[in-house]
Length: 86
Image (tube, rainbow, N blue to C red; front, side, top):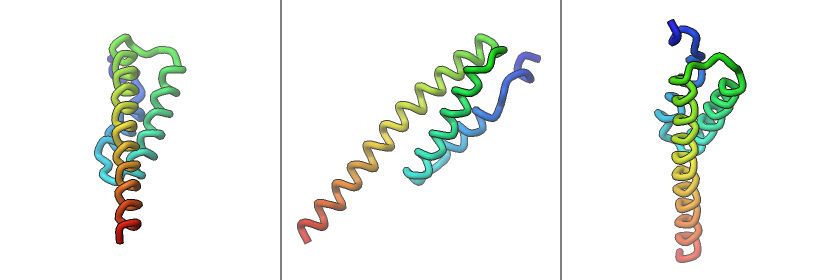
């Protein structure tokens, strides 16, 4: 019954972000998922289990976002190096 009270939108957006292969689209989807999570946190009525899941999801998305940004920056640096050496 408590599971019916939760907002599955944030979970769906997290799933979409996690399945995205394109780094730029991934970052966009992470932003959408984070926004939905924060909206859900602001609303009262979550169970303790959902609160934990929300905070865990935020942490996971933040770590993955940092990795994606690092990879994008590294890719940009490699392109710049190739251009200067050719």
